[in-house]
Image 1 (tube, rainbow, N blue to C red):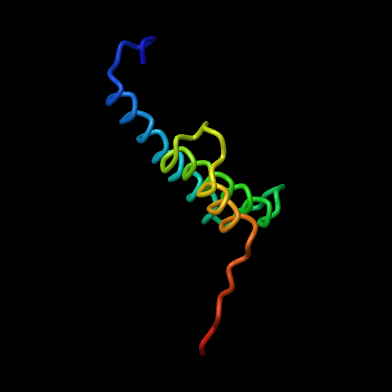
Image 2: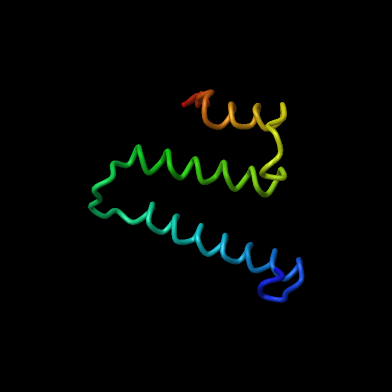
Length: 88
């Protein structure tokens, strides 16, 4: 902020725009069915990790010691599989 002489609000706004643009690019690449040297499972895991990092830095402070809530969220998203029941 000091380097570019902008307010905190302007910096946050610019970062949110960058984040939004990057997610658009990630989603576009995931949807397009193109040959890739990286298998889909790895791409899916990396996108999940990116989502976790976004959550970490938008919902929590991003750098404080891991608290119970953060551990529970990480466990729920990355460790504990979600069971999907098909009622059909």
